[in-house]
Picture (cartoon, rainbow, N blue to C red):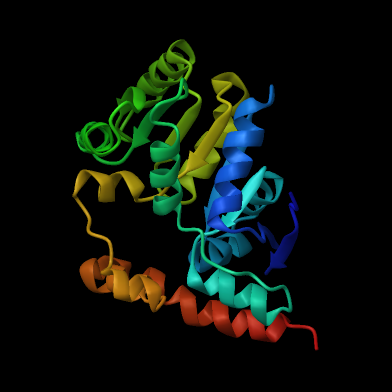
Length: 244
């Protein structure tokens, strides 16, 4: 299977569909003896990486960077690299939970506010009977507690670790503990656990299809407005960097 990438403002993003991403994770990553880091990149993350070289380096060294955002898909096509669809991090996680619900593979949920990961676990176990979630922990931990979190994950040995600490903290946290965690697949999932727990609502399906989920999030969470300003800046920068 092709692992072709496109450089969007110096961030390498895989040109991949949802089905292919799932196949790569299940049929390749989980069956390999290596450990893998997966990032879900949208326009906001790409813009952040342009200012944060540590984040940029992490993304460019990741084993898979899926196009989580209509802006990234637009940019790839504008740059002359056809990209069929957005691979939303939330949807990717749901597909994995469903595909692996009757298998031996297990999950660990890390991040979000206290109580959220547990609610997300209940949601997953209810919607995907048979799924194995071996542990959870919120994202509010001290330096001392962080060591205990790492030790717990090492002890429970999940096959897939979902880290919801927000960008760029989650990517930097994963990279910092990547080797010692020794988890086959670790994914930075942003607000996925919040949505699963019912704390945050996803945009209606018609807005998702119209590529307006970013607008819905801004309307629902006014504090995100400043972050959403990155979107028009992203478009302008892509157009400025496009080689004719």
